[in-house]
Image (tube, rainbow, N blue to C red; front, top):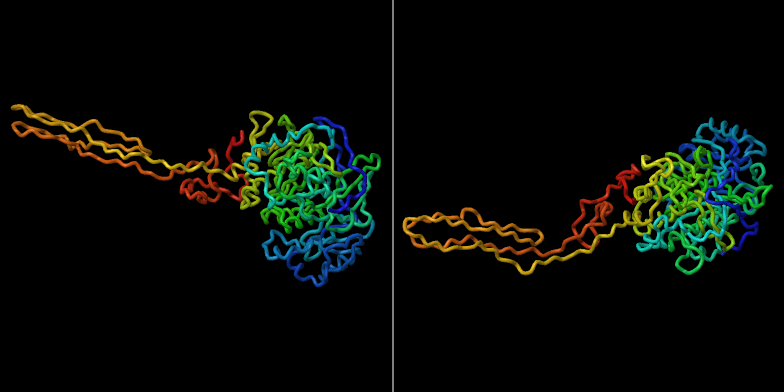
Length: 594
């Protein structure tokens, strides 16, 4: 595997159950704008009119180059006025296997535009937005990790038990056919607990030769030029990856939510260091690189995407990339953010169809740093989470960054047992089977602090892959002949006698059969006549033998799509779940998982 990169180890901060969360680097309005570049999206008509050959980005270690015009007169006039320095396509070309697939949005018309040093990004955006053929122009925004490092001596992985992983592992420990993309700082490619589970990834970080760091910080390591070496230089992405999947049940290290699923490292965040405190190391990257990373992960086979990152600004380029992933059936999980109560909404967690994840502690309380809002879907353990870290090590960290991979791991387990589910169905299962949490007994579920509650791996698997009870063959032996009593009638002189057959007989033989003598067999005998024998009709009742299908697990809605069970039983066909992709909470079952 790739050799290690050499910046210093990620630092640690002391902390307990309640953490003093470091302030965001980009807390000042406008501070998250990446200097010297912007995003340009053409509309469909302009995109088909391009005559210039535009590259898909720089080669490794080389300055950005390429065309300075598009071949569209109206847009080119504005580009010339802005004196742009480079013009490249944001997204790499899709693999041939996906070129014919229907796409949610037109990503091929997204460009990265370089500006002169010192040029105002906001002013350039306004000028381009007025040009004909431009769908939108926007500033590129920084994103950062959501992590609070703490004491590496934390003794156990309480989070896996909290989300019912041990019971879920009795069903499945994951499938190597399910790939989870970790869109983050990269992954330690040589970590012994992770290396066997990695699939080829990509380094999307491309901040230019001299990126402008936020005040008080500087970039280190590899921050320019895309390549296929997504080596972690921070430790954050490695920690996230180890929670999702790592070698487990091997007597060493830690366990992951899944043991067999594969991890795809997509590096979109670079290493940034506090000038005054070298131990304050964070992951920071751009919305443009994140969008490109999402597209690359989808096109290269990811079924689940984990994004333990975010920022306070909404960007269209990320919205489009998330919509592309969702339209291709991918489960997208993102962290709510670490700003606590009153913090501004964080993106990409707030984008439509993203599974937004908050953090709880071991007592099922909202972590003090975990952000809230109506878009939160579920919560997961996020305080003192033990996992893998850079340089083949292990440590505990806290943050919504640590909660999110628990949910991404459960999504991977669900797909491992039922790979035919869509991303929308998996997201719906995660919500519906969560263990409800509330701060007050009267609080509704879902609510703004916990969404539907704590993710539950066992309940999610039971919903996604219900197990029919064994079929049973019931045979009644032997068949039974039922005869009403008969009676001889001897008529004394001048006396009539009425004979009534009784009693009726009930034979229980699944189903029960009621044998009853018809009343017509009662006869009036008048003397003088010969004696007679009155016999009610006899009936032979044979209990049917056959296969009786057992019910599905109690509370389960039945086979997805109403398909007949694989054992051939005709039962339960009318018990099909109603998975409504247009309403992600359709069919919510109150109280499930309590």
